[in-house]
Amino acid sequence: MRKAVSALLSAALAASCDGLRVSRGVTAVACVQARLGAGPMCVSETDLDPNSPQYREKMAAEKAALQQARREQAAALGFSDEEISALREASTSLLACWPASASDPCPKALITPFGQPDTYFGQLRNPREDPVPEAWECVRNKWPVLVERGDDDLVAALQPIKDVYVDKRSLV
Image (cartoon, rainbow, N blue to C red; front, side, top):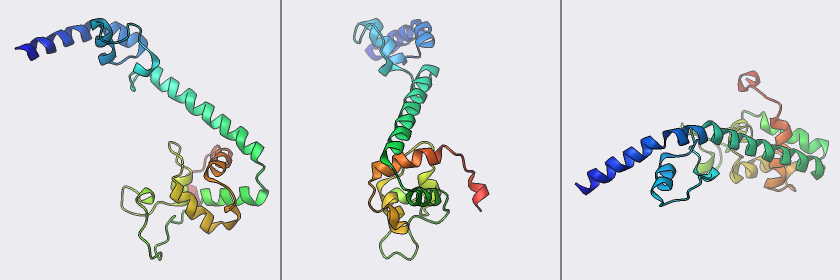
């Protein structure tokens, strides 16, 4: 009985919060907690619903700021033309990061959902995630001119290269 009353009360409070949730994009839990006095009375940005337009705008702004910072860092690092060329070639390579002839098994971070090693293109041109450290090891093995550069430097130098869209189908 107690659980049923609690669930009914939560549902009623959540329904009364719909206007707040829609206008501010907050989660129902945060809204109910604020109404009950169990949470903050004012809803913060950390309580944004991941499906709300406000959350998506916030994430897009953070991503744009990170990309701009990387572009500025890449310009300050002073990569040589040879290094930029090697990084561009790596980012458009359809070869598997982990060679099939390698005696060691492929690291899990480089395996696609289909059970195959990912390509350099797949790792370096992923719009949502940065390449994993294992991918950078493979890049340095294949393009020795990049051996002296750290992962952070390579990620920064990769940003201006990724800004130029390349369709994988055009590389075949």
